[in-house]
Image (cartoon, rainbow over all chains, first blue to last red; front, side, top):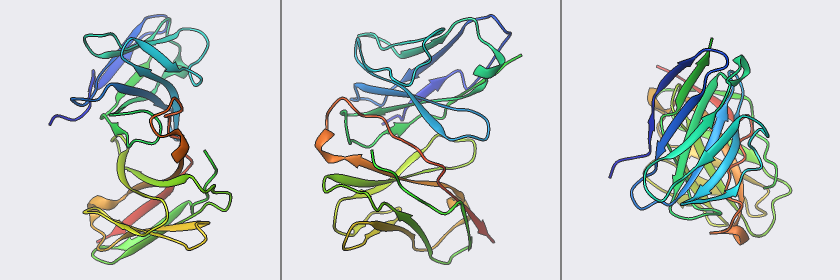
Length: 114
Length: 115
């Protein structure tokens, strides 16, 4: 059973460009979470999605960031007009249910903004 | 989710047991105690969780105090691969399957394992 997959693993963008991060959950999981880890800091929740629905986006910056989890295909975290402060590791996790279920994390995408 | 307190860092020797403490004095009766770890340059990994009774799995054991205000993650024989940041996280059991699914990570305990 393949684990959570994220791509790309490393992404370099210039300031002002768009970054698209993809996450394929574990088979049978319909709940996806995105977290961000800034350099030398802890993991911070960004958004929680189920298929075609955003359940909780309380951790998402109000501008430039968006996320989706379509009926078919991976979940996408999109960052428009990236700035240097967006440089971080972005982790996706999936679970078979919401609330207290264990979450299974992907290897992360390391975004570098130059 | 209620707050937890962990030491910033701990050291262990390879092949010796490691006891990682976590204080959660404001835990509620429905909070589960979860542990995750993050190896260097990797995503977090679920380790174990429990409510009241001690729990064992292939990775570790979880010992929960009788008053549930503290718990200890036990690695029975530390290996170099166990060097990681370990996070103790409380999760509300009443929300199982509900809409508040995110994990709240603190600073965790950075475990170093010496050969």
